[in-house]
Image 1 (cartoon, rainbow, N blue to C red):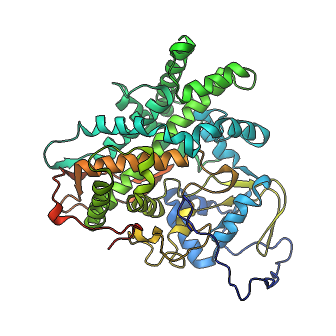
Image 2: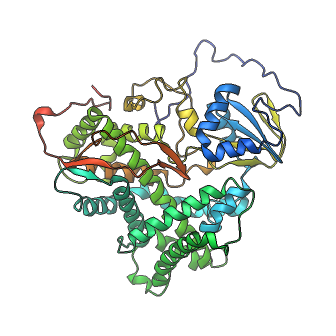
Image 3: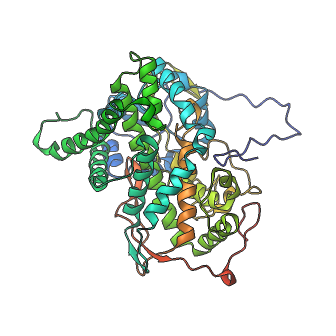
Length: 490
């Protein structure tokens, strides 16, 4: 059976179930995996800054699934073997910490949130936040998500036209997270917030490839300073208003839960910690959904047959009403279109780089303490060994009767103890929005428009803002495409 993320359990051969695996031939201590050469390796860093995924893909083709990059003074190991990647995230979790440079870059905006915390501080934060993002807790969010979608889609065009769908979906995702976090609808500052996020994210992405950052006061960082100040003011304004509100009058939202932690233990959860978690929820909570929905809209427009099949499933199951929490499991094919979108265009195509705190053994390699480890999940999800015709959009890959693929080959939300805290919320939100959109609109590629080029902007986004032709949907049962109950396309 596939679990919620779309993976299956490992198959076991009944004939050899009791056989011991052959011993692994270990490489001598101090031996590094193969990889590209260079005097300092800074040329490799330059190539990665121009196109990270293309560089990593080229090295994988040339050197294999474990590649060594010597970028003085660091040693980096790129792992694209699904089993080894999963082993790192699960078995070696306690031996890895997040890359210090990445943590500093993200921490500049998100403070000491659960995203960048380590050790006991991370465990405490994760344990406290986990209940609010569990599958059962997310069910209570579905009506709010549907209401936000309905309000936003009502403002979409009444006639067929080319529509800035990426911007529209980003605004909608931002509205959803503001409602869930602060019980506040997106207001006149929505465009300001969207521009500030774009500026801050672009600055963070550029900073990743430098060993240090310029001071914040330098003139050319004025736009970044303004963006960070605008986002900080947005978050603090909501927190201050709630702190000054009588508890019995306050709504029961995500901020209410964080303020309960503050009241129960103000030393562990000062208001600054509440601010940091709010900023992380706001940024990660809308960015992942917005990026994935943008790519899903493109996939639907570029594959009309899949769009019609998903729409027909939505029509038969929902009969025109908004989806409730109980309906989400009754939309398997729609879910598969989102899973296949996440396979092709994972919002986080490269997981947060890790550093080993102690020596560890990975397959036949003995890696010393201090090794940096890169896990490009997009390369694993595009590997033809696991996904035939990997660049084709085929939602049936995730159908109940689809062939197996290795655990670890598909992990758009990561894996192990640091798996994305909001994965259940993201899937519920995207499913609800996708269903409501298909009930109202047909998506098509504008005539002559090229396929969007994916680029890293911390999350994976189209290089140019995506625009699609949208047309109000007219139900016509004569052209409906049937779907099978197991979620397979006919």
